[in-house]
Length: 305
Image 1 (spheres, one colour):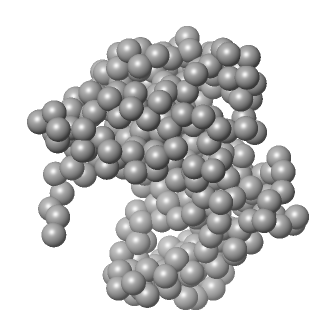
Image 2 (cartoon, rainbow, N blue to C red):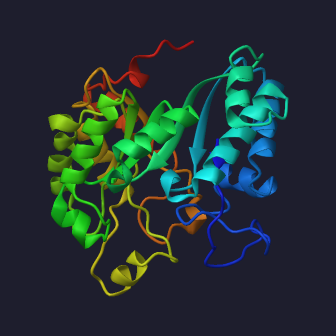
Image 3 (spheres, rainbow, N blue to C red):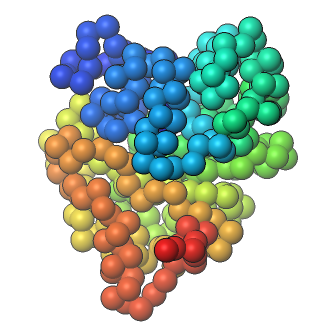
């Protein structure tokens, strides 16, 4: 995994040297972010190091899916985007190519081939022009922060986009042949477990993503939501509430969809109140087994040893 060019960080910590700034949506002690800090956010060094680490534990590296993290990809300058991806491919090719197209051609016959490239963006940043551009970069999959499919919740949480924009973005991405990963976030300001259950059903009514990430909202001290909590205007769900909610909704996921994640890799020491368990998927599966229910998403049906 790779983090893009850093944004200003609200504070300093032992993981964040003064000359390095974290992307706004990440914390420096998250595993992916920590790796980025160790390599000064350099794309070549991050990819080369990750390949070396995977090889050290016996993982094959002949086929690589490159996931570029760090916020809204198309908010960055295009020359920076092009350079960043070229340097990632250079690390796979072990050759410093003169230009991105050269790196792409080299990679077609390299020992380590890039077979998938993923970027993150927002629904309101998806346009035909942007899709043509990221296609030229080699992007094959787009992660998009829908977070909620309720316009009232989106407005309360100052998301800056609407459900109609999310739906339109899905249509454009589908027409352009991209795979789509939607992020969905229960426990946002103004939501309840019951409204989240109703909202989750909307994912399969016209949106129908190939993959989803379920990111329960986590209360952090450096977020604006913290002030709402101090005033008694927001309450994080307890772990048991989250397990019950996700166990309820997971059975409705279609067979064509994959659930990539059920929680972020945010260390529990950063969470002020609410769920602090990073093993939430395992806890949910345990609850489903107790109930005698099952999820039929692609990940849950994969062959296991």
